[in-house]
Length: 410
Image (cartoon, rainbow, N blue to C red; front, side, top):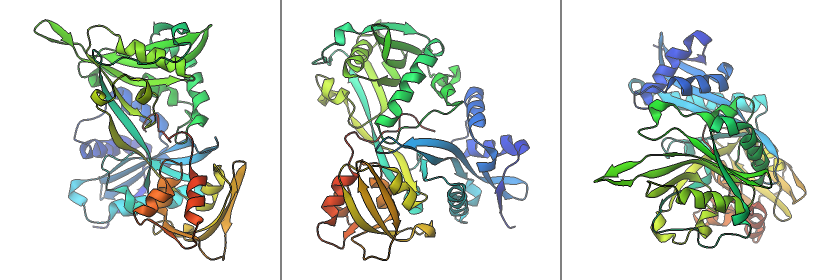
């Protein structure tokens, strides 16, 4: 039977989502989480693969705004809820869904497409590159301290609140931080509920979430949301402080929050996940060696419109280079593009001039936010230099002072 690929109707959502649940292990999301995502995703961006009346494939999409180097926030299609039933593998369903959705997003005017991958090898073949990594750390509290607190740390006042009571102030601070780091997502209406998501069924023995606020002279300079899981062994308490988010606008606020988390009673370690690779904790903790730092892939990205994407960001140095881009999944991106610009802005347009750098869109995707050097990609054979000197100039221009970071998943 021919498998039909089409947008889903409202009355098909539950059936569509159940197929997704089974693809991700068979355990349904909590009611709270399912209602959150149902409110954020648009049905006109959701695809279903139907074999007769059976849903055998799913693809969802979110309308996002992502920060790029220079501080602009660009329209981004957030791919999510992607699955193919085990009974219908090797039939090209994923490729069909991805290509149709990429083309539809491009026609809508989205500049980028982004996702977080449950399995790393899948999305490179659709032109996605790892544009941002993340850091995880497990810090043993009794062996590590904040080594050299920045000036003003002792002047920061800490208070504990519920996430709901502190939400408005924390979201205002988060919005201030979005344009500082490439890869950050602005939280559009409805997304603030993500910060409060804490279903009891998914705590796995941890406490409810709490929020500690860092203030200076009444102004909020940072916050951390966390939970505790106290584990007793032979009357000795232990267990982790589970840090859900940690944001601050200055070094002293960050250090005060980190010191607070390391000092909580009845626990023996602080667990942080999804942090930027250049997180201040790398320099503040007294012993990195015992803090079990782990680097992980985080944000997968690809341009839907190469010209618009390259023109949307700013560059660390002046650049004037012709890029020859290969893109098997979005053929409208194929060809040569002249990128000219610098710290003040850029333009990018098609050209017949000879190529100076040659690369696949996957390599361009990895370098786009400034987290991966074009020079490193060239060392792996993923960027070719057709004009001597073009690589060094372009690599310097594509850089950014801060590592790109996706603060939360989607």
